[in-house]
Length: 106
Image (cartoon, rainbow, N blue to C red):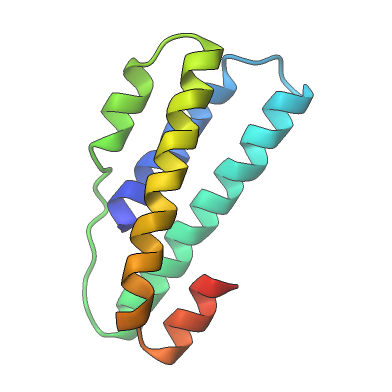
């Protein structure tokens, strides 16, 4: 999930280039990108807390996302990706320790 979240954060930087800097759409994408990057940091800290190493790889979503051309198509792809990510997070929540569960439900 960390690799997928990292892929989303990186793809959003590419998508932001389809919009005029500081436009409403650009600002919205920047806010989503900041959330994705923050989630990556949170996941990394949780993995480290468990004493495990984690991958710094970027998931397959990135290549698929940057292959999409056109602002509208990119936004549609992003929405589908975010919906998928939310479903995956929700599916994993019951198996998380209480601190991680609380972190992700916030």
